[in-house]
Image 1 (cartoon, helix red, strand yellow):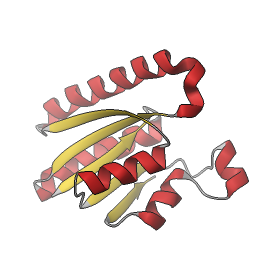
Image 2 (cartoon, rainbow, N blue to C red):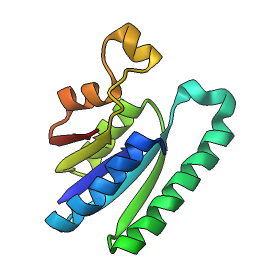
Image 3 (tube, rainbow, N blue to C red):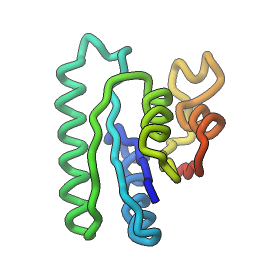
Length: 130
């Protein structure tokens, strides 16, 4: 079973990462933890890449503590598109996402959040952790 979890390092994402460890253990899955640098953050690209490396580094440490093997992916792109593409490439059985329950600025205008978009378009199970 291939499992993808998206994280941005915020508390709701960290809950999803913690959940994904238990999920991967229970289903003996291969866990891929993704951090995505949005093209909207171009002016702070280096800062966001460093933050992504830090977030993924913490995930590796935590995974080791709980006994889960993971692969980390640091990608650039729109979060929903990048996660959906990775799910196709990795033949994912499940995508796990965190949700604060609030929409971002763009999502308020467009009417959908990243998790909603992925939920509607994924070809696999999607778990949203709150």
